[in-house]
Length: 260
Image (cartoon, rainbow, N blue to C red; front, side):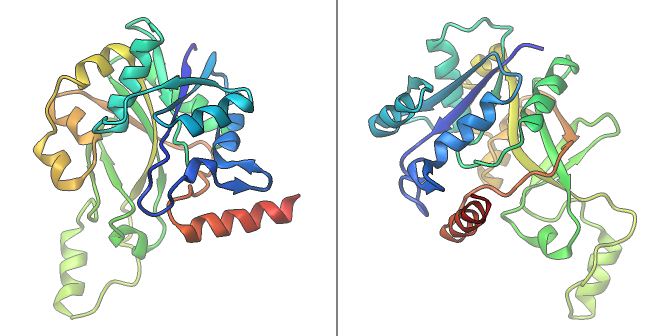
């Protein structure tokens, strides 16, 4: 299994400006992500950024850096630029490691890379984890994924999926929200780690945003809209929460401080 891990890192963030450079127990968050990626089986780990300050910090802690344009409409477009600049072969495999996941287990990086290599019918591989509480099913910040029996994605949504009609409607009719999940339904939360082939990325950037993608604000729906398959597997290890909000940052900062 041969692959390259790419970590996109942007300075701009509506909720946490400068997020990649936030301190976590004496190291920038981005450095902790990079160190986790370096523990994976990746042949090469590259940080992709459009910010000179981030590039300088990353270079200082020893990372390979690729500068990118500032106006990419999606993270997938940014990956394609990196693949092009690095001169990667069309058949090369890339794993996109989110720059705000400083605790990402290396095993998950390896898992998604292996799943792409072992599923030639899929253009993308990604991961999921079980949803165990009703609140998470109805939370639009948790992206739900439904697959077929072969582990290929049927749909991704911010709304509850699958919609268990009789169970949810019966609760609505009684004017109260369900307190527990319906039995026998495997609700899955999508984990935002992806593996791609370079030739797919080259094709992806030629497409216009899809109506479903725009409605849900989920760029992976552009691939499904254009007839490509996405392999989804349940994560082999627990996926620690990333840093999306100031509260997430303070919680992780406190956790790391205790472990020192």
